[in-house]
Image (cartoon, rainbow over all chains, first blue to last red; front, side):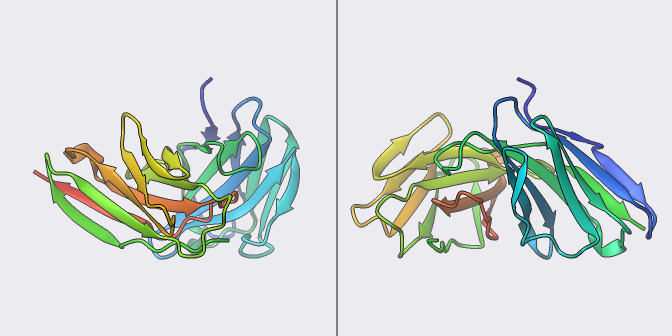
Amino acid sequence: DAGVIQSPRHEVTEMGQEVTLRCKPISGHDYLFWYRQTMMRGLELLIYFNNNVPIDDSGMPEDRFSAKMPNASFSTLKIQPSEPRDSAVYFCASRRGRSSYNEQFFGPGTRLTVL
Amino acid sequence: LAKTTQPISMDSYEGQEVNITCSHNNIATNDYITWYQQFPSQGPRFIIQGYKTKVTNEVASLFIPADRKSSTLSLPRVSLSDTAVYYCLVNDYKLSFGAGTTVTVRA
């Protein structure tokens, strides 16, 4: 398996533009997580899905952020409109099963820069 | 959810053993202890997990005393490539990472 795949790896955009980050989880994994990492706030959980259904989006910073999982092999995180404070590395991760006993696999991340 | 406390940073030299202790005083009976490692510019990766006593794999050892209120991750004979952030989590299925411990290995 190729692991968790994220695209793009780097994104530079201007304030006010829409940004869409993409993730392909590992086949057979039923949990998908989106994280954001910055120097100031560390690694934060934004939202997670189980069987394509959003379970907890309490970490989503505001309404400008939205996430979807239309099927088991694809998820998107959208920011509209983007702001400079959204600049961060965004990670997608997937896991088989709810228990933390199961290993969680992270993608390489998308480095977002909003000018 | 068991809260964990670990040192913010640790420095070491190549060839030394590094031990990182994580406190989790309110760990529940069924909780596992899991450690993740994050290299710069990469996502975290699972390195080891345990419930009690000692667990060892090709990367690290995990020591858990009988009361399970703490655990120690041991990295034997570290090299420069072991410089990373190490996170301790206790039965946290959402994997809410804290600040972790930044381990810096110097030549």
